[in-house]
Image (cartoon, rainbow, N blue to C red; front, side):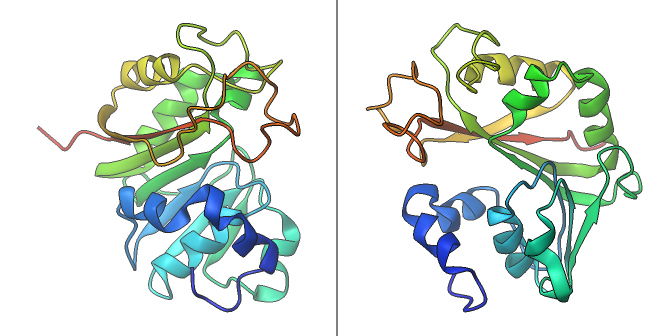
Amino acid sequence: MANRARPAEDVARDADRKPAETLAFFDVKPGEVVFEFVAGGGYFTELLSHTVGDTGRVVATREEPKRIADGRLPNVTAVEDREWGLAPGSVDLIFTALNYHDVVNLKADRPALLKNFMTILKPGGIFAVIDHSAENGSGDRDVGTLHRIDEAFVVSEVKAAGFELVGSSDLLRNPNDARTLKVFDPAIRGKTDQFVLKFRKPTAG
């Protein structure tokens, strides 16, 4: 977080996103290989890049081009949605923030996607999911309207793919979010109630 190369607009978001605590929760270490699924603006790409360091690397889909322009993050590689270039059992951590609901909304083949995640992860590797919380029991009802998803729905779906849920965190909870507004509403934007889930690929045997 203290890296002076970080953009000022990223630093301004730290108080709400709590990146140091978030990456510590997922136990991100120097030298690791991280696959960031749907990097978006690259806020976490930057942090993951600095955390894994020169001996690690970050492979990211849907990366904002300017984030890695002119080689400013040399250990980050942008890849296509379906062509990741990652060998089976080569990834320590898969990280996705604020977009699992979009995968559901777009009606992607999630069983196939999660199977691919399982394949590229090392045994014991971590799948990190952060997303905007919907009302309890709402399932996938709000993915296209409010851009929120029910935490229990995500847990059920990911566990059905063979992952173990090994932890959750209240780091990004906001009890003042009624979870009824669209996440882009000025009244709640940047301060939504978010769940933080830590899944693991089972070790052999």
